[in-house]
Length: 302
Image (cartoon, rainbow, N blue to C red; front, side):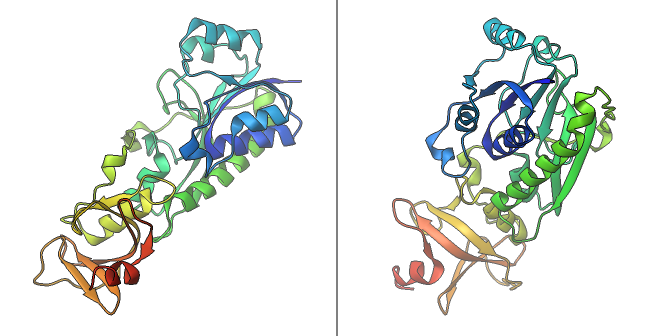
């Protein structure tokens, strides 16, 4: 049987590894990251899944370490997969499997290379993204593409909703390409560099709302970083206030300035830089509980 090494983390990593187990594949090594408490609440543990199938996971935080490379070599993999593993694998490791090393990326490459591709796609107002299976090279997300599948992004979808669709697409892509990979028949196609885009890692501080931006951009930021991500926030209400849900009501905001608040019949609007309002639906003052706009306003006498 084809010996498969898997580097995996997050929801997509768990789902793709589970697919391999469900098909009875010969997984000989599972490398992952230690479960983080703030993330485990929204995606299942790759480490626990491996143990459930009799494999003790390897917590390989530094794949560049010669001992890590030797560990993979000792497993004698024919095929290597990376499913949302968060480290770049060295060339020495990628050269080990005779059938190649393959990565599942959460975008329609070559667009949105880099970290947090689904969050970036939502933030940039894309109407679709997807999952891409590509050959791994020494340059992240640059290898030739074997297969990809698109998923839709609705105008009010949160990033987590899109991420779930991407995970489902990733499993389908893996399922339809697995046999040809095992048979050594894969023929990936080079990426079109003229269409490439790359985005870096997002930090919690990147969630600060800039009310001088158009209303749609503010809305896109909120849905890109809402639960389970760190969230968008503002200080126009005094202390830092997180904004977890918004909508764009189509209301003009003439004779206003960016960040100007309008409260009306229990509804809360903020003017943006394009003279349009964003309606705030769910908010949370720092140190307090999350609440809807009507309650937030009532507690502040508005």
